[in-house]
Length: 117
Image (tube, rainbow, N blue to C red; front, side, top):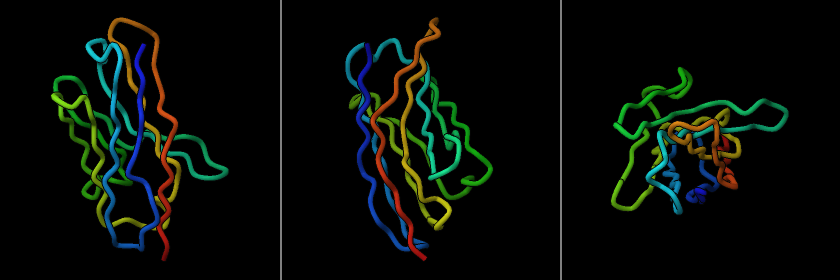
């Protein structure tokens, strides 16, 4: 079992920055990768960025150059630094843990990010 807790969301003006955190606990040794997803009202949940246990990162085209995903293994925490925020970045942001050698995954409860113009 893995538990994920997101934090760091909030209200920010366009052009501003936020840093989201995803703290993992439980069987963290089993985590293969962690991804950040977001879901805006009326839209499907989409992958924003991800980082593997080996540190390989990937990003959605819409956030490349603005968002950076990183991890602190000592704290079992993955971060999403979001710069140059746009109103279209407004969504609930979730982190998801992909489990090694398993079809299982775990989700956090989400954190709201609202960007005003």
